[in-house]
Length: 118
Image (cartoon, rainbow, N blue to C red; front, side, top):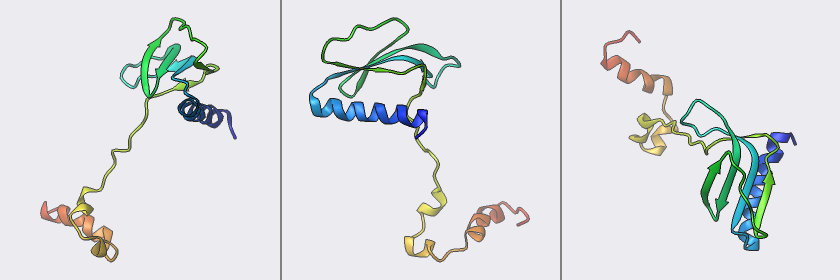
């Protein structure tokens, strides 16, 4: 298992462990944070309480004995990604017809309506 995979497995296990052991706070220290909005990386710390990100800061955060602390070791952390890729054209057809359809022909139909040479 490579280091990046190990890091993400550690975070997932820590959240799961937190739920099982009653730990309410997780502190991830020493990470490079990309927020998905700005064109910069913040080197800092993230405090999670329950399932909510409570604080993201470049300053140090003090944890209490009930805080699970994870050293990010300078790795990168990014927001969750969503796959907004969809094939809306296929949503209008019944599933049994989709199994038998010629997809190249189906895709060419809107182009033919626009009188493109297909």
